Length: 314
Length: 260
Image (cartoon, rainbow over all chains, first blue to last red; front, side):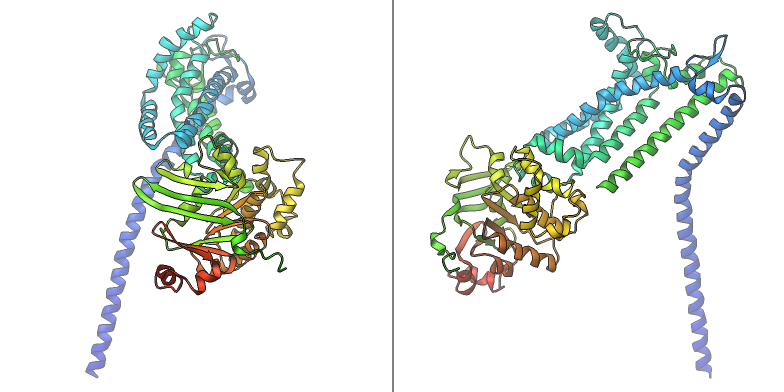
C-alpha cells in the first residue's frame, strides 16, 4: 500500500519535472525566436515606415496636380513661376545615366569576370579581386569630383560641344562605380557553372572562346541578369556623383552632352535648399522619391520574374 | 561471326601510349605507362582509388591541359600521330577523341542542340543535322524516349538518360576513340545495366577506353583489361585472362577483393 503510494508520488513528481522543463524550453526557445524576429522587424518596419511617409506626403500633391500631368508632363519647374510639374525631364535624365552606366559596366563586367574565371592564374586573381573591391569602396562624392575635374575636361578635348555639367561624364563615372559589383556578381555567376560542363564542352573540341560564349554565359544568364538589375538599381539610386557632375537643369532630352538633372539630384536640391516644409515644392521631393521607389520595385520584380522564367526553361 | 572475331593480338592499335608519365607538381600520378588500345573493342582500366587510372585516361585527349600543375611526359599516338608533339592543336585532338564523364554533364540546351553543338562549332555540320541527331540518339539507345521532345531542355532528362545523351553527343562527332571515365558511377543499377549494354553494342563500331572501379563491369564490357596500381601499369591482357589467371600477385589480390 505504502509502496504503491510512493510509486504514484514519484510518477507525478517526474511528470511535473518534465512539464517544468518543457515550459522552460518553451520560454527560452520562444524568447530566442522573438529576438530573431525583432532583428528581422528592423528591416520590415523601416520599409513600411518609408512607404507610409512617402505616400502620406505625396497624397496632398496629387490633390492639386493630376497624376497624368505629373507622369507625362515634359516641363519640370516646381520652384520657379509659372510652376510646372511634369516629371519626364527627371526621368529622362536618370535613364540617360542608367543607360550610359550599364553600357559601360555590363560588357566590361562580363569581360573582367571572364578573364578572372577562365584565364587568370589563381595568384593574379587573388591580386585583382581586392583591387576591384577598393574601387567599390571609393566614396561616391570622389567619383563626382573625378567626373567634374577629370572626365569632363578629357571629353571636352574629344567633343568640344560638351557642357561643363553633362550626363555623359556622370554616366561614365556611375558605370565605373557599379563596375566592381557587376564584375564580382558575374564572376560569382561564372564560378557557379560546374567545371564538368566546361570539360564536356572542351571534350567535343571547343575553344575557350566557344566555351565561354556558348556554354558558360548561357548557363549563368539568370545570375548575370540579376547582376544587371542590381546594377541598374544602383545606377538609378546613385546620387552624389550625378548631383556634382550632371548638373541641375531638368531637361526633356536624350542628348548626353547637355546638362540634365536626375530624380535623386532633384531630391538633394530640394533637401538642401530653403524650401519651406509643407508647401507643394516641398512635397515634390516625396513624390519624386515615391516614383524612384516604384521604379526600383518594378526592377526587382522584373529581376525575380527573369530568374523564375529562366529556371522554368532550364 | 567467327570471321568477325579478330584475334586479340592482330587488332591494330588506334591509341598507343609510350612511356607516359604524369606529374601533379612533384607527385608522380602515372609512371611510365605504355599501352596499346585496339581498334573497335573495349579496353577497361581498373585499379584502386588513386592509382592514376583517371589521370591516365585524361592524358589520352589532353584533358589535363586545363590543370596548370599537371606535367605530362612521354608520347601518345593516335592513328600514328603523337598528340603531344609540338604544334599539335589540342582542340583538334579532342574533336576526334570523345569523352564521357563520371557525372552526366549535358549542356543547358535542348536535346538536339546537345548533339549538334560540337559539330556546329567545328564546322562539321552539313544541312540541318536532323539525321545526325536521329542516328546518334538511336545508337545511344535514347531515340524512342526523346524523339517527340528533341527541343526540350536536356536538363529535364533523368540521370541515366542524360548519360546516354552524353554518349550520343560524343559519338555524333564520329570519333576515333571514346574515353569513358567511370560513366556509371553516378547512376542507379538499372541505368548502369543499360549503359553497359550500350557499350557492348557500340564496341562493334567504336574504340572505347573505359575507366571503372567496378570489376564486374570491366569483366562484362571489355575485351582487354589494364590493371593500374600506384601509377604503374601492373598487368595488361585479355579480360578473360586477367580475371581467371592473373599473372601478377597484385592483380590477383585486387580482383579477388583482398585489396582495393
